[in-house]
Length: 351
Image (cartoon, rainbow, N blue to C red; front, side):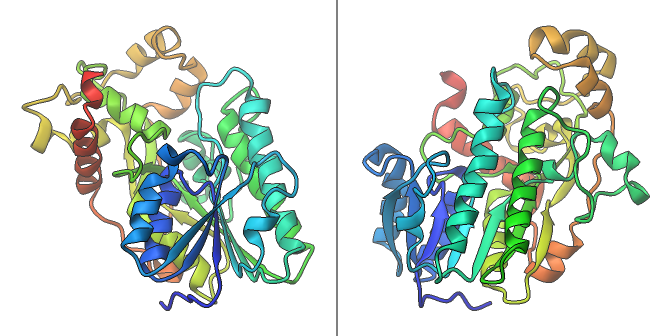
């Protein structure tokens, strides 16, 4: 796959977990990256990208932009033929889901997409969506045709009051497709990843997946972890999928990018071989009735969520990502060990 370096490429939310690896790949390929961030002056957030650019063939330019500020991406997008829209909040526990999740996701996507329609240089937009736009709970996989999620399925079970993150991703992707279909200047491709795991490039990553893995090393899951059905994908494999989605002319539509049909316990058990003797990583299954009983008290986990996800297998078809984007998925153990080691090096479990 040839990565064109003829024109700049815009990456929104460039300091994010997934975006960092995407930017790294682009820079190493010689691309000029327009990095849209909330505060270009905050070098603590941007220094890891600046360092990568310093020893890469490509160049990076930072632009100030805000998801909720209409037109704020125009300057960053000017002259770009390709736009990667990765900026979107990923939070599970929120006080105001409309303000904290739905508005940034939906209004931000509309902001970027509408700016693209008025920027003649843009020929393709790649939106980072999620499998959350396909399903809310693992039980949705069971209820899907053949018991497997595919790109043809849309989430119909999330709401503002139940799983608002999934709701926000569903609404945002639908907005992207609506705007894309109303014009013929650029093509839209979406990448729909499952839970992202693996090492971060930033010093202090804030992704929810790091919070989950932290519990695997700080003793929270010492007595066991729930078999909570999920999919998982390495952040480096996901970045490669983004690059392919942007630079493969034939790429179209949605792509489930998920390397493993798994659960929380299996993620934890992937750490036993290397870290089982030094950290209280989970080894056993936490019975569903225990999670059902203590979830609402200990972790703000609703019993509705427990019944629909714990001890329920999550299944998705990733064949399109392999076929159309050429994605290859690394072993889950490698992803978890690299992620866990980074957290040890940062003294995460001693804080």
